[in-house]
Length: 297
Ligand code: XIL
Image: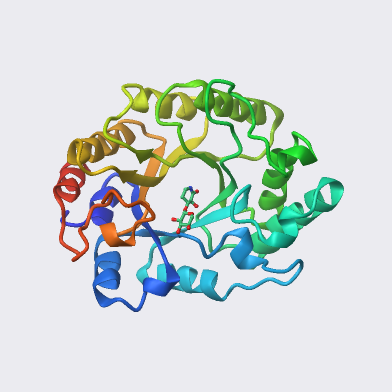
């Protein structure tokens, strides 16, 4: 096939992009989006600060724009992200204890209920593990409400939208390391105790090399009985960008339970990074990295 989405679909997978509601009026952007991709993720519009700017007052205008763009394209819509220590509204940042726990679970319930039946996969909890060698949870206001906050969030999400796949999503999980092992142990425990979790998202914000255990790490999560999705892929330009994009693609395709890949933006000028990490240049031209991905799919 001649596009990323159609090629991924040949093996039952999706190829998606994070998109921004404010860019949908850009015709080059929207042309590439609708031609190449069969999944979308809201880059910011479904986060806590965007959807509940004051407590109990929910605003879905921009999130719905992303959803409706995805529906219009016939694309899968990934929901990102119900709970995260970043991009919390100010009111949540100043809560703690039972008040924060209740507000967080209510947030999960309300947002997942609003989008019930429309979201292919939710990132229920994002970035809850610490960097470095501890393998432990990250300290955050949410973590300080009790270690069971993650499973409480997954249970609330399942109740609110039983059809959505529920993912735990994190970064610096690009190989077998202390952080990914901490997550692995949590997922294994959740599966053993019947906590509803369906998938793990590996963000894959990458630099100039790819960890030699990238595929083995995907495989070990799959072997726990969860799907794996590459959720926020971008790769620093100036190293082996095209090769790394190709290797990530091949690693996902080598694991049956690796069900899709999302790049975190469309053109280099749309990226949150400043190192030209995407598949299309600022003019919307396909880069060598694009060809590498297409050939690998
Ligand atoms: C980033 C967005 O791309 C930026 O526009 C925003 O200013 C900050 O967040 N991990 C995640 C994403 O899970 O939500 C982040 O997105 C990038 C890192």
